[in-house]
Length: 151
Image 1 (tube, rainbow, N blue to C red):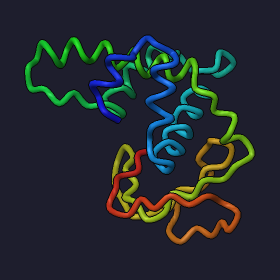
Image 2: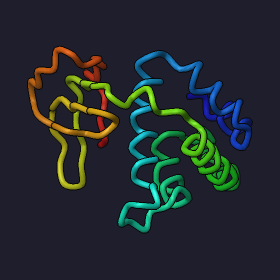
Image 3: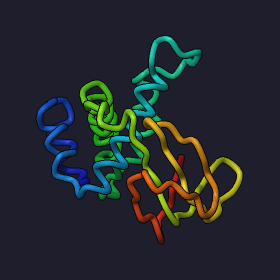
């Protein structure tokens, strides 16, 4: 995603959704799964203190990266990056991932204590398996070779 475009449309629902629509298919699908996960996680019925605002604060730097090295610009953009992600979480229709399977194949999975080569299987927008060589013939496949996968 082009950070400048995202920042320019951070509070504009249609602008944010158009940014997502403009992404290549694999990127759009992966982002939709991530947003679905965040929507489920932020649901008022879950036992977590992470609301949509907290999730936007934590995840915005992982989704958008300010290209400037000027600290004032970085700080200003951080607020807009969080707003972009918050707008996305509130407005992106993630129903398309319900009842679907996505297999992220061949990436480097990074978690809290290590990184390792593995596949990641998501069902209905939720990670259900992390292992090498997952077989899921009915899943849509995203080739993550050479990329980090951060569940």
